[in-house]
Length: 492
Image (cartoon, rainbow, N blue to C red; front, side, top):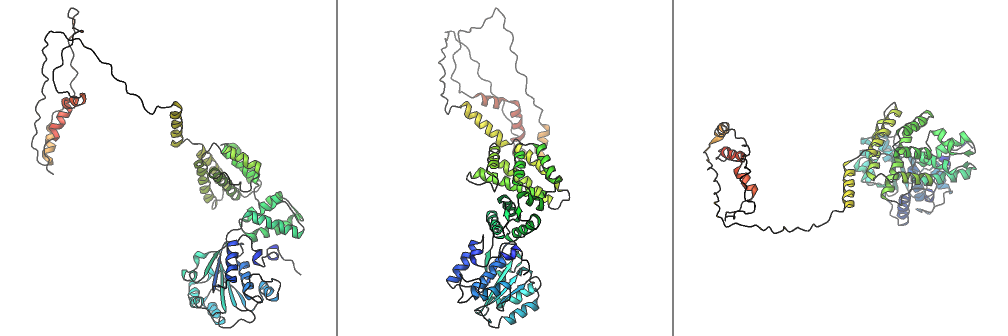
């Protein structure tokens, strides 16, 4: 028998074998148990998350002996035929190569025939978004009202390219990226079954590089077995695929938080010279900063696979920064990631991004000044209420000699000229004299022989009291000149 790769050898055969898609498995199991089967299903998700495997498992559950049954035997003849693609009742169609109207017409003709062995005739169309609009429109009527013995199962990675009229006729299931921990455990299970020594750190590195795709992780493990043999370490994974270890990512984050530009640039230089993928390193750095930001907001969050000792050191280094500083660094690296995607010199953009991020987390902002001032006010202790001081009574000695009090001078009458129109206003403004503030009056010098009586003060007459502000306002020559200019009636 020819060699079979891990991705095919360890493909899920039953609902229990599907990993990371519990919401889909539970819904399909309940639908089969309650006999609430839809006529069309649509599986949406990124590559390697189990769309085709789930579709085949659903087909087995529908056409197995004494079906539909969610707990079927995967080793019976009907299920083996479906798994190997030899069943006459389960037709797998590639939407990329059969995307025309003629192929859809052939499908509509074959829908009329009853199943040969099972209870249902199942049509599975992979990459259904590749069908043309004309093919979709030709499929609409059959998809909406198919015969009772027909079931449609569609799979796609780009649901936005499917017509809304097709989406509304299907039950949609979104398959999520598989968690890194789940992939790592499954890789260790495969290694144990194959007699391979796989370190846990190596399994985690493979799962992290697979980015949520189980098939990608299995293919990478297959390649590592060919490269290393029966023993695989983390160093082998980093050398083969150009990944960066968690220790290097933590060290780069540490230099970033310490605002050490030379150390950060030196680390990037070493990684670039050793052939590491800088885009992958930047993605790991963003993920580490994101974990720190989440830990700032939720202390119970974990370190995204970073070893406990390194994670504790990073948390201690990030204590002096508020969450908005870490968020600004993430924004800088997100812009850098977009530029690096199409740049030829990725190292240059990475280094510029590191320098900008260090400046961003170290700059002084207005919020910092406000916090310092607030803390200073709290430290000084400003009293909430200050008692009012009562003025001490002033006693004056009044002499019996009569004093003549001069009456206050009356201001000159204000003339209000009649002004009509804007031209009259302009001429009045031009004709107004230039009034400047007169100098303060100079009091004559007092001779030594004439000494004013400081002990006796004249009695205050009954004159209406006015505030100093009102006196200065009415007696100000500039105010009077403004009144002469603008108090006339202006007709516009």
